[in-house]
Length: 52
Image (cartoon, rainbow, N blue to C red; front, top):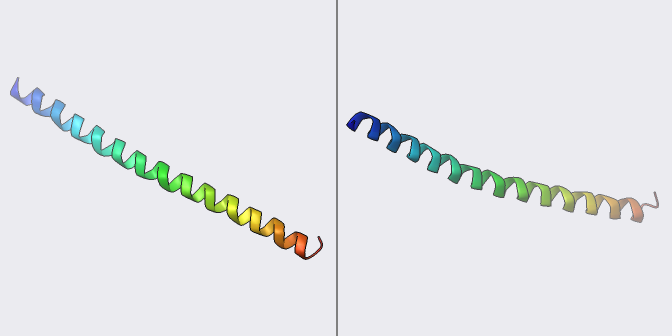
């Protein structure tokens, strides 16, 4: 009985760790997408300035 409780506890800890990591990844992904959007915006303006 004690063994299975420990296993369940370990799985819970692992889930928490993964959830925390997922939140971090989502933040970085969102940041990267925003950076890409900004770069596309800048390049579009450079094209306009160069008359393309």
